[in-house]
Image (cartoon, rainbow, N blue to C red; front, side):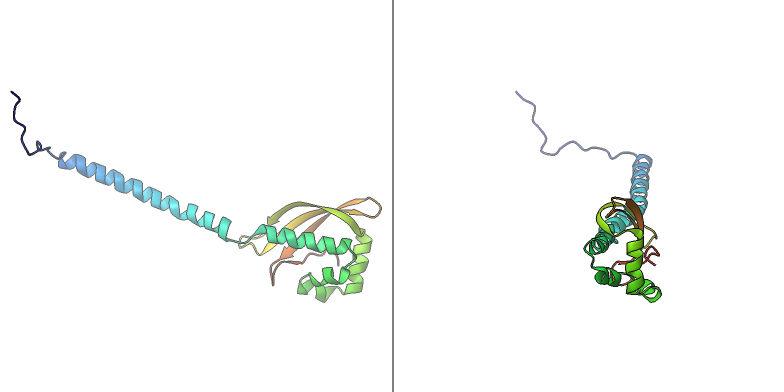
Amino acid sequence: MHPALSPHPPSVDPPPKAQRTAWIVAGAVIVGCLGALALPVGGFLLWMYGGPDLDEARATADQFVRRLESNDDATAYESQCRRVKERVDLVAFTAAVERIGRPVSHTMGRAAFLDEPGTSAGVTVEVTGRTGQITTLELYLESEVGWQVCGKTFG
């Protein structure tokens, strides 16, 4: 014969109150630490993926140099920021392009934001002139109204 099984499971005594409290405190500390770390990490990721895009500044610099290569100085001149256009007219801009050496090809180099909010950027471009001379340009861009070239390279 088999012993009869009780329809009720055997009761399990809960752990002592001190041990239970220690686990609760340890869990709360771990959750608190994870929460404290999540704020800066989450903020950084939000800034990296939702913040300003450096590709737009690089594309503006690339387009600016392509316009110089195609002798479209008027459009390249207009893609500069207001401060530069107040300082230099189109004739002086074209003279500066010729003085540096009108590019026939270029290679985009490194790019970086120059301020924390990401409203100014520096882009390095290597341009090859008609004579084959390679010149490195450090273009300074700002995002006044879209990205615009704002450095003193051309005037």
